[in-house]
Image (cartoon, rainbow, N blue to C red; front, side, top):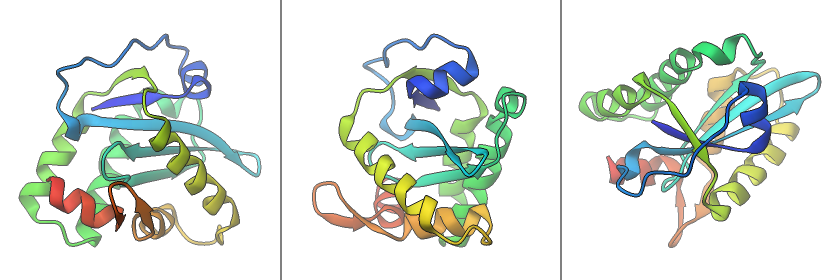
Length: 157
C-alpha cells in the first residue's frame, strides 16, 4: 500500500515522501490526511480510484508507527460489513502489510477527502469509527459518473 500523504501527515510521521512510482498497481494507491475533530487527531485514508475510505479517530504520533495494523483491521471489517467476498478482502488486506509513503498527486481525491472531512465533523461522534466510515463509503461521489465508493471498489477488486 502506498499512502500519498499530505504535508500535515508527513510532518506528524516525521518523513520526507517521494513521488509515486509510475508502475505501481492502482489497487495499492491511497491518499492519507490527518485532521482534528475537537482535540483529537483523526486519520482518513481514501482509495484513489474508488474513494473507499478508512477513518481512524484519536491517532497519536506513537500509534502512527504501527498504523498498518489498525488500517488493515478496519479495512477488513468494513469490507466484511459491505459484503465483499473473502478473496477480495484478503487481496486488499494483504496490500496493507507494508505501507510506504509518497507525495499527494491527485487533486480530485484531495477534494473528495476534504468533503468527507467536513461531513465527519458534523456527524454524530457517538457512533464508532466503522459506522462513520461506512457512511462515507455509502455516499455517492463523482468519478466518471456518480457512484458509491463501495460499489466502485467491488468493481475494481
